[in-house]
Image (cartoon, helix red, strand yellow):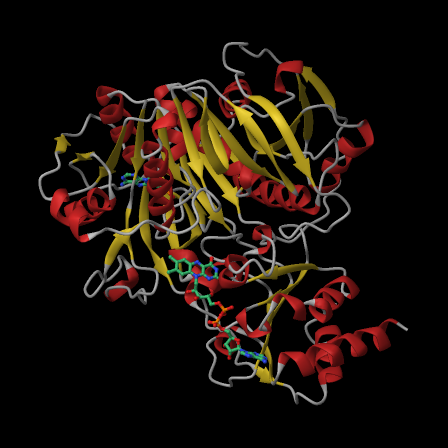
Length: 322
Length: 249
Ligand SMILES: Cc1cc2nc3c(=O)[nH]c(=O)nc-3n(C[C@H](O)[C@H](O)[C@H](O)COP(=O)(O)OP(=O)(O)OC[C@H]3O[C@@H](n4cnc5c(N)ncnc54)[C@H](O)[C@@H]3O)c2cc1C
Ligand SMILES: Nc1ncnc2c1ncn2[C@@H]1O[C@H](COP(=O)(O)O)[C@@H](O)[C@H]1O
């Protein structure tokens, strides 16, 4: 009778997101007076696994089987649902990232468990089980009552604090069974960029819009992002124009991000753009139109020409670093 | 080969969302209903494949679970170019219920590939596509940003952290798509609008399923603090505030 949390690993490593998830699930386990089991799929080093115990995991499981090397949604979901049944889990927590979105709905059907996706806060009550989730692309929160016996939650990234609560749990490796007829995904090609801070992981994001005027003006924006250890992003028209790569497009039809700091340069602040960035902790707007809607979403603003302001910001950050 | 595109009916994203007294439900007056933006893109991609004789895709069917009042959205999809449509006559109350209705109706129709969007822009559930595939017990590929047909079999591009991969799964299968699947949504031509009037929409009654969730009410996000303006000639001040006040750098 546990709370179960799926902690994805990336080539055997966890990320901040994994610890947010464990912290969140641990708080729920506390509310329900249950133990927390954290698990991952695929080989992960002992020391890395132990880390999960620092944030409240009472049990740590590493599920292994060669057939799970490639993520096949159906095969993985079955393994997760089997584990939840074996554990008698009442709540299963996922991240609301790409992997969570791929797996949670399938697990939901297997366990006949209602799902609340994109939650950013703890449940307001566990009996009935009521939790608020993001809706209308960030324009509202919906209170969802999950009526099924088992509940599935997926946590929005960067929405819950990491809380230390060491348990000293010793990780266990579990050889799981996989029905070979389920694992049918074959990968034919992989492209990965390395060495760059991923937009979805970045705590600071500097983003440019049509106000940047052309593909040639991006150097100071990129420099600012790199000085701040951040990632670069853009609005949709910018990626449509080919000024910046498509992976950088944020908004309703692009990536949804929630960094600590989002600096929007020459972006008007259309609702579809804000849908992807409004969960950022702080938004800075730099725009030469004082009436641009982005200023309504921002906590800090500079009304001015991006081409003049950006180099000065770069200098200011350089001075700070000295 | 037959592709089924699931479309949900959502408020136009430029509509300001308002709630009725007590925040129990949204105020639907004055809302313009549209095809969910993702589903418009998946429909576009499905039609591109159908229009390419080499792909082997013969028909594109749109599927919707919703009341008769959402027929205009279905007709719009037919006007854009879908061959026919199915509608499950119901109030799509929760993802589990909706997905089980769609799965039941679609399996009666037959299909090779079902395409769903990554999320509906209203409730942001990101659930229906994955649930349909599990109800049908078939493979699903998510985060799909590219779909082509090679030698009669689908080839997918899937977005992964920091990159993408090409992959295959056998049909029948479900593709859950996101940005990249098509560039611009196809729009209806005058001829398409005329033709849509007579295209078949088959209506299914619901199968017996539970709703596992319920909406208790809505909350508007707390209004953010007013914007603090910084002199454009003194950006160093911004850096100082970000460091000492917001503490984010
Ligand atoms: C279904 C749908 C989905 C969409 N999805 C997305 C999405 O996911 N993401 C997205 O971004 N958009 C999306 N859009 C488009 C969105 O509606 C806006 O058109 C878009 O966000 C505008 O981009 P922008 O702010 O870069 O450009 P603009 O709206 O053109 O704004 C440019 C801004 O730059 C300012 N500016 C100009 N010159 C300067 C200068 N020298 N210095 C400083 N500022 C300057 C201007 O004052 C203006 O505010 C979507 C639209 C639809 C219909
Ligand atoms: N009522 C519905 N009818 C048909 N398809 C739907 C419906 N609701 C959701 N979908 C499909 O499921 C996808 C994800 O929706 P959701 O799980 O609601 O975020 C959408 O992009 C549609 O493809």
